[in-house]
Image 1 (cartoon, one colour):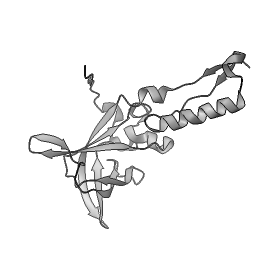
Image 2 (cartoon, rainbow, N blue to C red):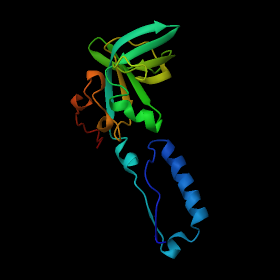
Image 3 (cartoon, rainbow, N blue to C red):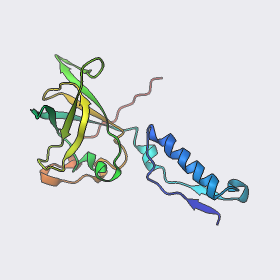
Image 4 (cartoon, one colour):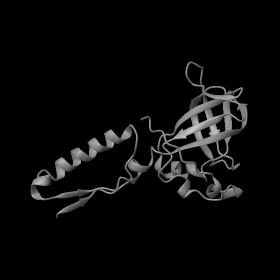
Amino acid sequence: MHIVDIGGGFTSGPKFAEAASAVKVALQKYFPNGHASGLKIMAEPGRFIANEPFTLATSILGKRIRNEIKEYWINDGMSGSMNYLKYDHDDVICTPLANHGSNYVITCKGLKTTDSTVFGPACDPDDTVLEGYPLPDLQVNDWLVIHNMGAYTSSGGNDFNGFKTSAIPTYVGNSDKS
């Protein structure tokens, strides 16, 4: 054997170092001679490369408090860009933005948060995006910015219940700080 394909499905973000360490240990255990024997290791790190460069901004369409839990509805969900959560069980990293006059500001810093539930717009019980997620008190028209939304997100969405994932606008920005 000259090539080992360890496949894909690599995580991105903070969990990548843990996954890479596990792969390294396994390769050392099962292929101790590694490169000395001419063995080539092949991987498919698409998610690692494509996940972090993309961010999704969703607006809050509705809010209620039920059994002391704050519940929010946003304009994208499990049938749309968040469909990857059904299969990948990835962690959602979310930053709330609240409308304060003519400016939107990050609201979590220093504010009390409560465990909240966030639903997508489909009126389907499976359209639950977040449960028990700590959020400050948000209002309709505030925003949730969801990070690491590159790989397997909008490309895997569908038009369930009339919400067209393909109609979600995409904007290109440059955060180059040089």
